[in-house]
Amino acid sequence: MLQKKNLWWLVAVAAFAAFPLLITNPTYTSIGFFTLIYMACASSWNMFSGYSGYIALGSAVFYGTGAYAMSLISIHANMAPGAAMFWLVPVGGVVAMLIALPFGWIALRVRRHTFVVITIAVFFIFQLGASNFSFTGGTSGLALPFITWDASYYFVPFYFVALGIVIFIAILSAAVRRSRFGLQLLAIRDDEDRALGLGVKVTSVKIVGFTLSAFTVGMCGALYAMEQGQIYPQFVFTPVFDVSIALMTFLGGLGTLTGPLLGALILESSQQWLTISFSNGSLYLILFGALFLIVILFMPQGIVVYVRDRVNKKADLARVASAATSPGSDAVLSGSTPS
Amino acid sequence: MTTLLEAKNISRSFGGLKALNACDLEVEKGSITGLIGPNGSGKTTLFNVITGYVRPDTGTVTFNGEDVTGAEPDKIFAKGIGRTFQLTRIFGRMTVLENMLVATQHDEGWLRSMTRSKSSTADVDNAMEWLDFVGIARLAHLQAGSLSYGQRKLLELAYVLVASPDVILLDEPAGGVNLTLINQIADKIRTLNAQGKTFLIVEHNMEFVMNLCTTVTVMNQGCHLVSGHPTAVRANPLVLDAYLGGGDDEELEEVARG
Image (tube, rainbow over all chains, first blue to last red; front, side, top):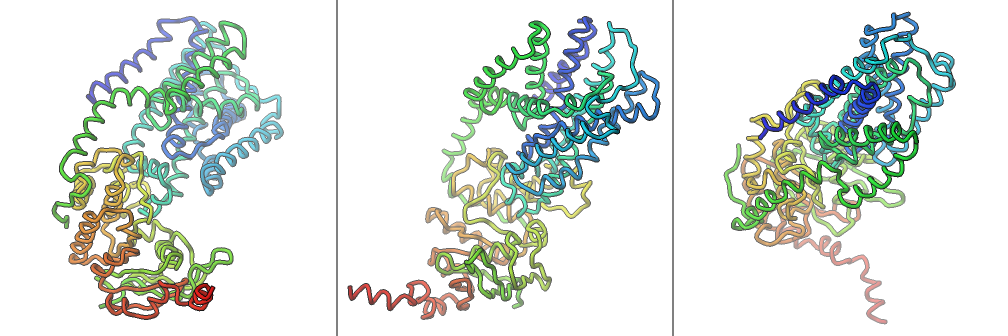
């Protein structure tokens, strides 16, 4: 069964890898690129917020930080425009982590709802800062070394780097889910005080999880800046980003591995496609509204959980029934004493 | 016998309410100590102070000769003081086995603890043994949220035991549980006690306390009232006053006179 599951992952990766080679129209490659960026960001957001239950609405801080790190370093180091700039993508991720550490240290002192508010506040501080400091270029933003690849394949290298990032975060999320660290994040989601009383160092676990999730988002921001060639504070520090990745994860299934990937795939690709096809920037909002209404009404835990429950329901019911009918299910207290 | 756990001169106020007022408590090594008292006498607050959930205004908590006053709950647990809650608290969206694995303790560096697999064979075997001990091993792979109330109580006991603490604080282990299960929980406590575990138990079920405990401490209005053998404590007039409201005698007489 596990092997079959792994096979599906391989098929999915192969399909994504084949996409820009089969459909060479740059319009669709660009849709693919943005979709992958959002898949990576939603997945990374889910690795902390989905697992721990701490809904962060300030991830654009990391996205913007990664974008500005890419821009400032490439400009000030006088880098030659081209593939060498890809090396700055992980650097953008590291810079985002350096920002995330003090951000998390402050924001994670408070619980749940207050945490959400603090993350939003920190986000606006960064947005204001980027619009007003001179080293960030203020509201006119920054222009990166201009890459002159041919328009017919311009998006392809970016697409494959983004795909690499998605594979990275999917493997990382799976590894965290299987680790003791991931178990502790889940315990914090269910009952933080109880976890604390069972020896879980909740504060450090939360800060490490928060910081770790900033890395991939920072990388995506850096890649975005490189692809655009020009960044503006209102586009890299945008509240729409914060809300989007959260909604994508909710749609797919909060706290699941495939949920955020699926949610981002559905939402981002359809948004891009609708915007391009109907040259109407807000049509997608109406359709999204309808979609979310359906999800909230009929599958509030997201698509993945809904489908999984349907599949597992019979097996689970059988298991519960057999456990309940075995003699003295509640009060059987037999068994040896472990030494 | 030596004192394993000692709380001395503990005071704690919440606003104007003095929940604990210079309270003392001693738990002897190897004992099953009962902690009783009327509702609101500060038993659970004392538990919270001992386990690090509430910081005392004054006073010290000593465990194994070491001052542990005001230490964080995770450190207290690592030192060997485990507790359950009055209203059972489990991780509802995780499996029963995962609940057990959360409590498994490893003394190691932070990097190792971050990268360690959640379910090493040794950890799982140990967890399953304790689940078997309390009798819910066959439920290991069910979601903990689907357990019945009694099963939750057993799970809570099991995951405290998995870290093999020296002293276990139980907050109303018999509350809301059927009679058969109460007796079986008492048996488990006796078995563990015979192996050297020390217990401190808050409980309102007097029969449970009197049968099980070797020492009983009574609290009233945030203070230590009396300690001693269960039979001696039961006969103590101070205890009867505390429970039956002796301080209000005059008021009662007034009511009686109409």
